[in-house]
Image (tube, rainbow, N blue to C red; front, side):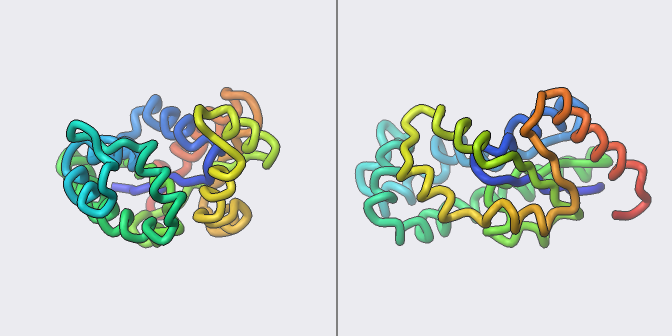
Length: 197
């Protein structure tokens, strides 16, 4: 089974690309979706213990958690120490299931792939990118986004140029959806026709 890791900075089109892999029948493990589930389950109690008031009715209040983190960015490491092991556990279960099903190719959608050294757990890395103006335009359209929040998020991510330099495959999402779709299809064709990466 070939394991692809998909990553990219905020606003680069990673979720769109992941959906295109899924549309081609590639099983996708979405780390963001896993976190959403954890914020309604296993991660709630440990987060409330460190971030009092950051959960409401058994669910993590992302807005309040974000507010507390912006006031004390040093707590990002504490949050990661809670969440990352739980995300890894879900990822291992996903991989075990697809190995048992003899899936030829799977995709791990990992927002902080390089930041968490996850490139060591995949056979090849796919990086989504676009020009900075397009990125900013996409991000600033998100509800509740501010220049400060955008700057904070970027400060915690490996710069796009470094990601591209480390990538095995690059998908440029600056153009039309059809262009992105064609790039995704080309990667799937390439990795599934190689004996080894």
